[in-house]
Length: 450
Image (cartoon, rainbow, N blue to C red; front, top):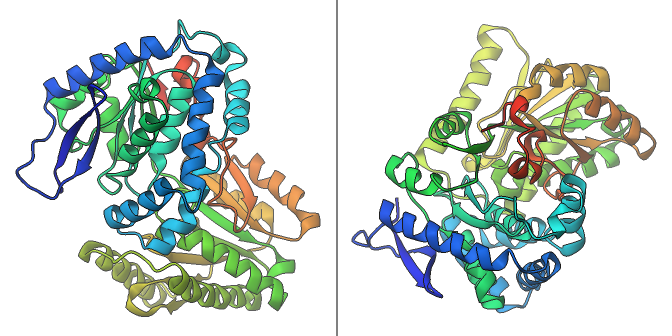
């Protein structure tokens, strides 16, 4: 685990950066206490500013990250490729998709929808400090957390995941470059998960702790947060290929290309990455889709080279393949494996529908269904863990099929190929993005407590 040095900026501890030196000092609980006090003091100043003024600053930050030739964009690409292990083509393709939603019209529409017009007024009763505990599976999640917190004029302390140590720091730097006063309201500090004394210092004065991670990590955090807690645990997504697409060679190839991108972007590590593809139609259509998906994943492995797998990740892919082969032999379940070189991708064409997760790392289950209703029935069995469905169906069927999956409780339904391009209308885990920071009405939903 790399160490991180706390860097003072504008009189506060504003961010942490990897230094590569094992002798560097990591933050102590007292460091965090002082940082929290400074964030709260900065928030009192920012709370008096007009909401539109704050959002204008955030827009300039997003614009600088989106402009292909801007120094901030180029620096972010270099730093994120080096710190996350994702290839530069992956960063260049995926990063804009995460930043594009953070523009004023989308932020204002989100806040109007979830908060009414109260967010535009001076936030006397709103949260003063929000602590975000983020996973490190994909980069730039901190950009949304920081931007939405500041948009409601709350101070934000981000604890990034070990897999994405730098993005939160870069985003804070960008805010400071545009507006020092607003930047003083944001900080990113890494500490090792489970460091209870540091967490106690970070959480004690937080109005809200908003955390995303595994079910186990969320349960452990929930027990250590004294105040309001919003937790988002394990989620998975799937794709659906309609019979009219599966039976047409050109439509099938286009659908596979689109689904292949949804799988390959961020190496299937996000909750919006499909792990199962449900195919409507006969056995021939099922295998045709499986073959096209294999071809698409092979192409995407060249266009978006995958991260090097760790020994543990390589073992997980091998185990996934071996378990499928064992099931085929011992349980006489028909399984056809289509595999890439060097464990870069795996397609398993199975004989029955069951929305079971894979081991990720560009591994897919391809399964038959007789209808959208049958697919929805399979989805209902795993509803607490579902995040999104990507549809590859004809235009005239889209609305009807979307309605079937929404009725089954899938939070996000979109065209295949757009699964990794959500806008702010998407509510991760089916929970409001910002309303839970203000209201106690989410307690009964189980993802939030006081």
